[in-house]
Image (cartoon, rainbow, N blue to C red):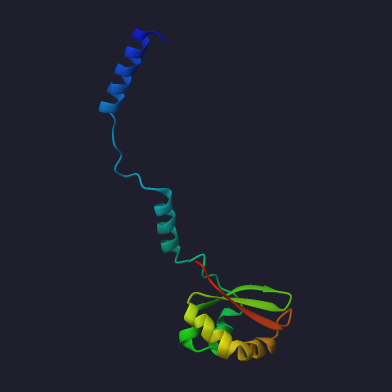
Length: 121
């Protein structure tokens, strides 16, 4: 590219920069997704499970509010807990009662074990 072409390109670029229109209505995609989720009222981390209601009947409301069923596989239910203090309380005091209560339910695969895991999200 010659000197004249470089000068013409620089002039054209300067003209485009000075005459650009800034669109104030543009927002990041993440903001739009958040608005859409708010409108439909769903939180992808709080999906419902058939066992979610049963957690509320077995556990005190204060603990059940911090729990969600994460996974159910081969008779083992993993319960995700969003608070370390509640995780300790569940492991220390509610593990056996919860396993017994869930074990008596009519599920396709009987619950034999309950694991608790801290929910990182």
